[in-house]
Image (cartoon, rainbow, N blue to C red; front, side, top):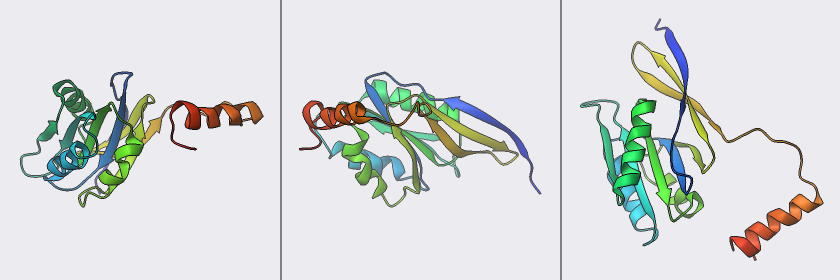
Length: 165
């Protein structure tokens, strides 16, 4: 029976004005299909994609419409180095605007996180390779919201962001 060689935490790094979507997929055409889903979602969206191929050439496949964000996605994928995971770095848009399109891609198996928070990937390693066990997204709760917090949330969603009426 194969044994686990070890566990590690990989801290993803991306600019403060960006969001990241981290997931798992299963096929070489993932990069092209994710690109199409993103590029057709908004003319102002800037993004980079990196996908860790887990068979054949085992390359990090990449694409995007922004060289800087593509390089950041690749750098994070290199640190994670786990089969069939993908990293998308977004600017001028939010995961909520593209997440359903990404989930609708036939190759996408799961989304681990879609966030602007600090993100750590829990990686497990064996003699075969590396896999993702999960993520740590942001920070633990500091309490339960009170009436003032509810009002702040509603103001943020309605008046500042414009997602609710």
